[in-house]
Length: 424
Ligand code: UDX
View 1 (tube, rainbow, N blue to C red):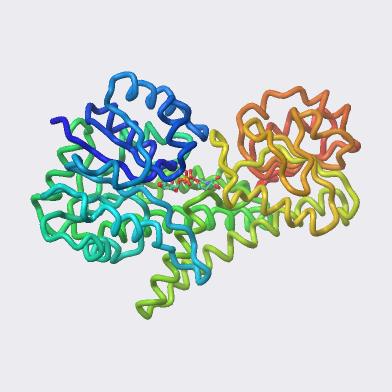
View 2: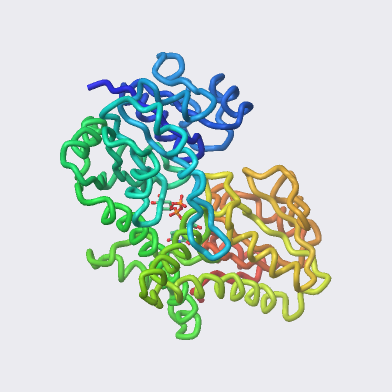
């Protein structure tokens, strides 16, 4: 089946969704409100880095299956399916701000064809499907929830091979129509009501964040026990009920989803009278992790970092992305700076200025005269650098590896003092 699809919003989720739906053979029109962005996308230029995405966007444009237009209303007049992929930033009180979604719903309502299906892909608070239905003010269209689970860095792979497809709808017919869009994909399909679909997304992100905070807490304990967290995680992971994934300790979780969605879920729970204390403490553990890594750095240099130069490798919230949103690296840097340190940093994907940080053109330049080198993002490239050269340019040979990325034996052989996370 080939469908006529509109995608509103060309951020991470929207653009990936548009590109892969066109790749699956559908005719897709993507809309945004930024004229410059729409023009650039029309030329096949993707404004952020995601492996394979630019190629897939160009494939869609060249095959005449992918177009970009200004404004939601212009994208929907022929659309059988309208995906809402709009930002839901955090409001002052920690809840998700729905103003973009609400404005678009009110805007497109009069332009939709009868029987169109409007699909919420953004992570939206439980109850939003019903709210959108009201705002559209159309009895002859359907509103469905179809949360997106893609990860940055592997977005296309995640879309083309999803672990599951979740569709929340009050009518079976609309759910099946949405499912038919993905008929090429061999993934389990879960059809449920809209509230459950919306809750699945939040509960999944919150659970994954819990795994990360849990292993970060275990890593701290391992240091006190004299145990190695990597062996502990491996030993736990063989239990199928636990699994291996998301048990890598580090400087804490970040990104555009986990921190925001965890806070939003705590808030949503509060609104219905439930104190989600487990999740509150996951968030607190994460905040403390930034602090703990900072203290580790202080201990590594033997006390105060006031006036010291610190080299940081990695600024993005994880590897294989250029995204700095809620990056643990930036949180740790903030702590370092507040204690008087001078920070020199290198990241393969970051070239622009960052306030209070000297962003260097290569990894060695960042180490010049540094009292300590701190690894905060797990870029694979860092493992293969010339550590003799690193040793030569640093003021002292001290490494704090907050991602357990480097080889301690090789570093110690070169005279480095090495400190990882949760290992001896
Ligand atoms: C996440 C979800 O995985 C995805 O399903 C959802 O759609 C959006 O949010 P993403 O934000 O791209 O995806 O990042 P993810 O790979 O999940 O990592 C989140 C954070 O946790 C990163 O800062 C990462 O470094 C950290 N993390 C992850 C760990 O510290 N240890 C781990 O074992 C896994």
